[in-house]
Length: 434
Image (tube, rainbow, N blue to C red; front, side, top):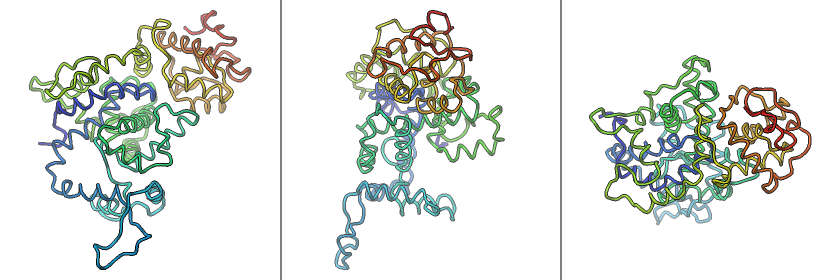
């Protein structure tokens, strides 16, 4: 049977279901679909169970992978001809950081042999080329995502990942640990990078017009093949954002969309069920009800998750009732980042930061002197209502309480959709946020 023609195993779905709360929270912070975040992990869990266990080379390499990603040569102890040779010690942050730096230098990646040989040689010579843990996260990719995260959130740490900046050894350890949430967070950052790639490669409007499952399948493909191969695919298929569409028959997306067609649930339906609140419809005997209940109790900010989904799909949602849920941490972080860079909190600035991220939003405001951009499609009415609620709440929330004077926020945006408002609530009173 072809590698991708496997339905997600109930045991793997239980694993994801037990972590559904964290998956949704991470997706909320990063502005990505939860299904797109989880799709890559589900694929790796499936391959590990259905394919990798039956590949003698992969099975034989596992002890070596564990050793090389956990140990480094100890240069303080001379090699002894009477022993097994080189002395080893637990791998350090510096060893991994040096290996990562080497992988980014000319000649740091072996490319002279057939692809399969190159992969083996790279892994034997540099530990960052190994894939580790339940999500099969490449160590090099994990460090790249951590660096992306630092750029995305220079003044905050909503996912609690900055503790790894000086401890790559702990990052690797936690990526290997099936009980750690680090794989979920790194997968979320990969999904965010994939979201940004597709929004640019297809235009935001065309990307947003895809169905929920098509976007999740594309993000699963991105998780499986990486940025470089997706960029190559974009170029090979014309390089035109007005016509480019990802190949849903390729690596990753094919398994996500797999439907056995024999009365069984399709993979999208299985994964959606696993990430749904409350008790799953298809539970295996080893499901832990307490974890399902924990997820259900953690859905008190569902209104914000709905708004994120509506913004990405162009749909509409019912606006949250005032006071129905606390502000999400990322909403507060976006507001703090805007004010720290001299821009007032308004519905429009919050909306732009929500869509493209606070750093890119500030860069846009400074570069163009406007909050208008083709990368920021006009919001629907429900999203506009949510942005107004966020702006009103943030004006009395910590450092966001006193927006700085002047700047872009002093002038209403002439573009359609959410307009800026100054002074506070003037836009709401004048109906500028239709």
